[in-house]
Image (cartoon, rainbow, N blue to C red):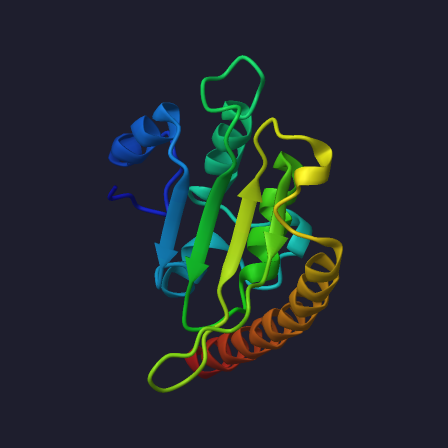
Length: 173
């Protein structure tokens, strides 16, 4: 479904996606759109806990709500797959999804023709037994370590953006 990730899920331009969420989609794929829209999703220097704006807070909330026992999609897990040119925003996405019960997993690096890519997988569990988690403890620990490493990429990018903005403002004076 087409959507504008820089806008809230409830914006009329995102009605096709909102309709799909309400029907209980099992897999969402965000392919090479998050990094390109970083400026409209996250203010430079914002804490990880503040997560992201745009479509994501409402999307995570809506999917989480669909996993309530009274929902028709409550039995099934839902996966969100993020593919992008850099994993820099994965920690902010994970921080935004965590309050809604999503588990984050960094699958093994995908090998493309040129450079390896690191995807992010978020899983909202359905009403399955607690021992049927989609991500095992070893993978969870590895993913947490990777997310901490990517958070340092995000901090470095924020410093670079702030420095460039400062230089541009000084030049304008």
